[in-house]
Image (cartoon, one colour):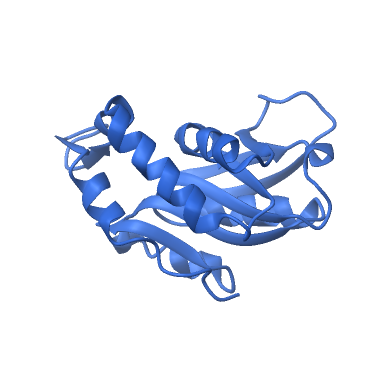
Length: 181
């Protein structure tokens, strides 16, 4: 599926200017990009959500947030658009009935779960997260949305860690990132 359209270019600067770089977190040699300053800057966060809503309006029917930082972006976006917010969570966090998907991480495996009754049948869903690394989490989320009877319109992330080549996991699904680091 082709991308909906390119994201507004000023959002890259807005996000970049509101990140904090934390060396050696969560372990030595890792440069963590902290989105806390973006969330703490009311006008910047509001501008991000407003622009994303304008960008995706009439292109999606629901927003799916990935646990946990994806929730922080997906919930206000869904509210702004007036569409359902779907939660895709780590195993054991949602009451049933559930569908689940196992996926690989760089250091093992994990599982994501979704309440399929919360997903509007045939809906065009935007999957939202903060970071795309290996693509395992986003790929599992795509499979869950499709398994529940909806379609993934696009995957949106604030940042893509290019060295991990996560977009290759997306295959035919459009994935847009504001920053490529």
